[in-house]
Length: 482
Picture 1 (spheres, one colour):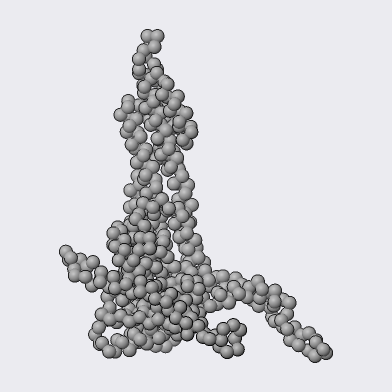
Picture 2: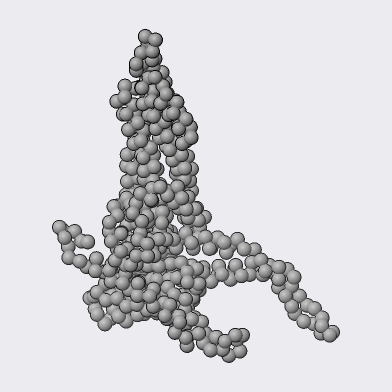
């Protein structure tokens, strides 16, 4: 970046491009939702057989493609807005410095230096000559340069040096922004195919982390979520953001938005699904990268003349290096596949759209899943099911199934009304210990400490559900819904 380039730069061109990508992201989101909640759901109700299963598989891949487009275009939009913000700040500094130079009867040259005219009191009968001031950057260098200018007999020199320094600083800031953002924007390029693979989602996660790092200045210009805020604070924060700011937080900080009680369920679902897709792909790839267990799991040794089967040296070495990690990955992947299965069953037996209101594969020690059947913000009735002793992410399928059964039973009781049932697993559930186990033989479920710790978290979630529901059901104002 040089003076000429920055002078000619129009940051609004980048914000306009960002708006285009943002519109494409919204369009992809709408297409994904239409496939999942209308087309695929209708097919599940009406069709059966091998051909139907094949068609559902194709629809699933198409939905994944739209979800990937939604996520990546949202990220490109946020990155372009971030670059426009950063370079725009430098451009405004440059424009003000140039205007001040011209007002001081100086001329800005093509290289950013500032020429100044002759002027000042005569010395030996001559007016001090004009010249050129070259901009300096850095506090020390600028201090020396301006001190020298202060002793100059030509007063225009001081004006020229100050403006030249400001121009140089603006060009430096723009250059740093360009160097920070250029590799991030270049990285936002998908493979030239029609398949969204685990690698694509892992790359998306890397892109998000890189863009978020580059966007620190941009995000600092946006009001941050309230620190330790309650549900109403969170709702007011989200409501106060503009469309571009909401898009930026969804793209760059989805894990933050998805965890905020009080934010609309549709927003939390969008944020958490992005985190879910990226995390699931990463765990699947990590699991696939672990070498297969050695075929010779055991070996035979002889003790007191009798053969005994023991673990082989090869298997012990493998287990020491990979055993625990594989067990952890299998547990998490099993739970995430159960969540994905719930997404894919929307429409089956009338099952409504799923809303992922919370997700963390390692949260609270046993993972974190909050999943709603139907939108609780617009439901006439909402029920919350809290899984109990022994619950973890690996076995979450049975608890999601119970939430579905609760929805079916509740819906049958109030025909024609909207029901939402929520499986809420956002706490460290007690584990049972049984006689014969090492350690305490009394089941942990007999202690109330687990419930005491979970209570405030559940209350905050319920408060958030109330706030979001009230915001959605508030009376219309000026023809629009709040």
